[in-house]
Length: 315
Image 1 (cartoon, rainbow, N blue to C red):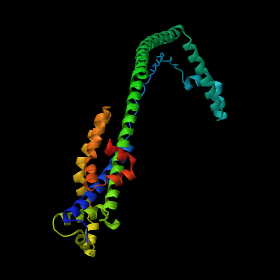
Image 2: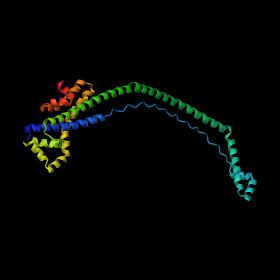
Image 3: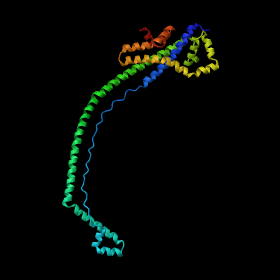
Image 4: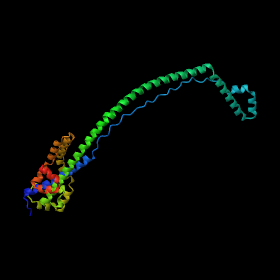
């Protein structure tokens, strides 16, 4: 026989269910905050180095030598005779022809008109190259000047500002994690104290799905907690409850939005550097748990378990 009234049993089961959900949501948020990364460091300006296009010299076409192998043989009857008698000799004749043709070509290329054309082509290419060099040098000077200005801005303004912002972010992150961790631990200690003080809910029923089912049964009927447990222990019903994963998601989501709003308000106060407001927001987030502690007269038990909570309730 339970020592609690039906109303008290409903209250105990509800508080255990709410604390269990709050712990789950708080742990997920704590993990999320711990995994957060700061934005990447700004990249340094890149010093662009222009490539100087190389001018190709437009050489005049080589003079043509109008001299064929036949012309060579006509002038060298001896080669024809020997080639008719000794066929491979024709190869030697062709080599001599090629040698003579190259000599004629070299002679033409040494003529003043061709050499003048080559000189003009080289001078024209050199002048064009110098013009390009000057243009590229001017562009490079502008690029160098801008790079030096950008680099100075990067080193003296952007990076110091980023480092300052990063340090502030690290401090804020540490505070958020500490406050979240404190809240999760506060809820865990409260739940543990609730179980230990009331002695109503045994270990096997300290599961959110089961607690929710028990709360639904108790809050919608006048049956006792013991009767609700008996109903749950029926094998077919137990399987139905244990497999009802959707019930967990739905029930926790109903609390999730409210808790996340509380977390966001806390984060905003921390980011603003408003310590007083941050503590106020933290206390508001703990209000429901504080109400549970006071409702079940858990103050003494909580103080014996956690000195920080003693400070919280007596500050």
